[in-house]
Length: 404
Image 1 (cartoon, rainbow, N blue to C red):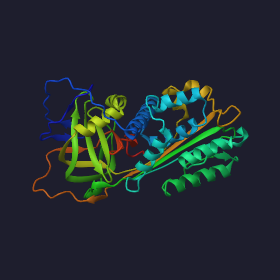
Image 2 (cartoon, rainbow, N blue to C red; image 1 turned 135 degrees about the horizontal axis):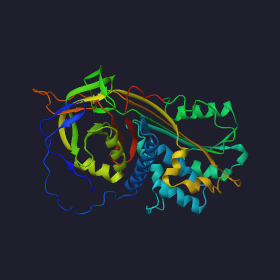
Image 3 (cartoon, rainbow, N blue to C red; image 1 turned 45 degrees about the vertical axis):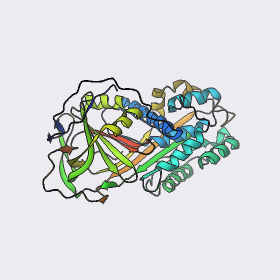
Image 4 (spheres, rainbow, N blue to C red; image 1 turned 30 degrees about the vertical axis):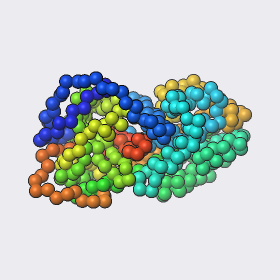
């Protein structure tokens, strides 16, 4: 591994996110490579996760000073639907960006459909919507509509123009996400709209262990030394997994959620410089290694209670994923006989981090000496532990400014 994770967790004092932990570095030994992803589902989950990490990195590189959020499976599903109408060359370009290019899976679409069904199980807390909307002037091929609908259960739609489209898209996303995303678009699509992708994600998981206290206003340190007061969740003697990565100069916590879902929280010891290093390091393999290496402990856990609403047109970011040539000439020959340009890739994430859980922490006679207080900028990701798929991820620089 290119990173070193030190896991000897002793008594620690942590104030304003600064970690003072004792860790002993052992003499490094050469490790035998073990393939982490061995089934078609786990390999595809790793590919969709790596696409998500790449997309997040590209988004973060364009905007280093804002909160960012992503529900990547909704975007990979929409792009995969579109690939079903692409020429062979265009499909290869899309598959490389989607990280499918190294997969040997003749049933890729079936595997993806089954993976999407699994990660949207009723207890996992994830709801997504992904669909293609096409300008009527393109005279889209109805065969393409049928192929996508049979494979993914969602039929692409032709646009009629104006307010009717706005209402139709918002109503469909609201229905697909169980009334959790009520207003996907704030304004109508451009009148010259060609091919438009919609990707939305809602997540509200339930902790295995609930937080006993919530709502107390406490300080959160911002870059530059300023602070804001935000509502915090708190619980002493909280069971979680934890470790220190010396290469990334951060502390990592893994908190278990219901139905084999968990949240990883990355808390850099320095602010923005280390956030960039973290963003560059995230891969499916790295996170899988973390899941196997972090050590169980009990901590005094404090986290912001978050309500996130984030919207972004991701079209400009796709060029940073190696799709510049494809965007210039999409070759969507199976979609329309006319040249069809991608116009928008609209994405919305709504997420809530609340104190609810299924059980209370065990009683203890003494308070935890080990602290994990998330009171400074942090990065997080939520992952399905069975498949390894990335569900949602985010960068929180200022919890006071989370509705965009």
